[in-house]
Length: 370
Image 1 (cartoon, one colour):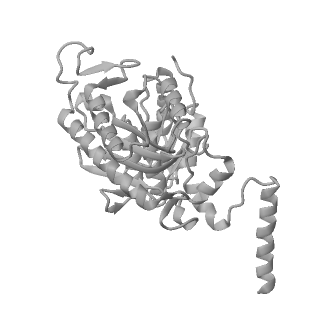
Image 2: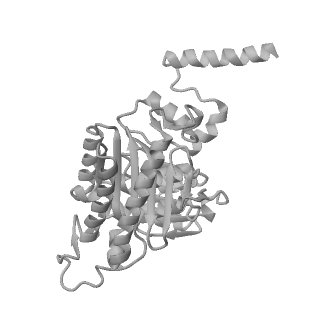
Image 3: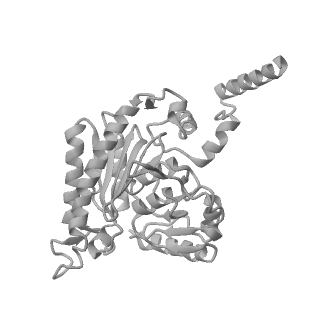
């Protein structure tokens, strides 16, 4: 027994020496391999590659690495719970606006330049006065409780992928407290304006680029999807969410395809959809990324792929899926980061197969038309 114990100690010591000298990038115990494979962590310029490894090891349960009452080393769990309450309250206030005004675009008279909605970048990308009013409600709740925190909402950013990417980079480099609230007050605005009940409120809170908590609220069904890092994902605060573990192959999967505004991105999406349609149970195009990612966390969908998404489209959904046992990556296969714009979200079990199908269909990248 002493010889066996000594052998294991020597292996561990050797691994540490190799790590210190840069011969290997990381040492991961075998018991952590499954967790690493199922739940990659978000990251950005705030985090070094070595600290990313530590965070990845803690994604299944951050408290197992540090203290049970801390989500990250310097972020108490109680603080996250208080922020979650604020986020949920704000989401419900914005949800009331959605519920009261859904279908506003289908009831209007006159041209699309009326006050009911306006075209942003192109005819597929619109905004209504209610988007702005909903964001005001969210930001008001955040400012009242956390005035020192930074805030990024879709309605404060000019239209287009380049503008949203630049806005994220700028605020990440200038958030004095490290805390950043990211929201889309109405994800699925086109659905909302048309009267389709596939539009939600979505809010994510990050600390130094690491997503801490997520809220996606569907006011039409009164479903509140929420998660705190390392604490699991829940529906209405009671039902623990889990991705579908029964679907292990693409042939049994229901897959949602993105519906991007950029015509080149849309063509890539259609190539992927045609390829997957031959090899999956069925395809959907819900056109509301925050809702489809919540549905993956709840086990209702198996996968969702999309293009040129902004941070507010995905930050909450990515954490919901990770905390429910699923996987989120870029379409090039790299782990999800706040800056990720082309993505595949899944239950983890069909991820590699679907990624391969998309790659074979030349549907993993595109060049912006604008």
